[in-house]
Length: 74
Image (cartoon, rainbow, N blue to C red; front, side, top):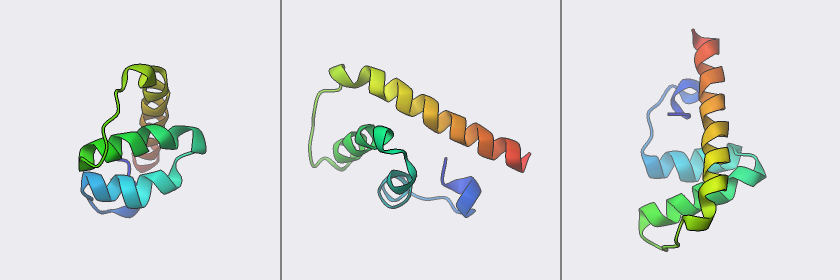
């Protein structure tokens, strides 16, 4: 969802995460998306139990960015 407003295109989850979002995230939010990406691709699996606080901060950041983009387009 984050890629659509600035690019005007709809990308696959893998393409949006790998080639677009990871490059634009602040460093502290990249590990969560990288972990999700490896799980999605099936290349690696790690338990998420200890990641809950980081996931919440990552989600809050991305939602905030999307809301800002939506407000600019609105």
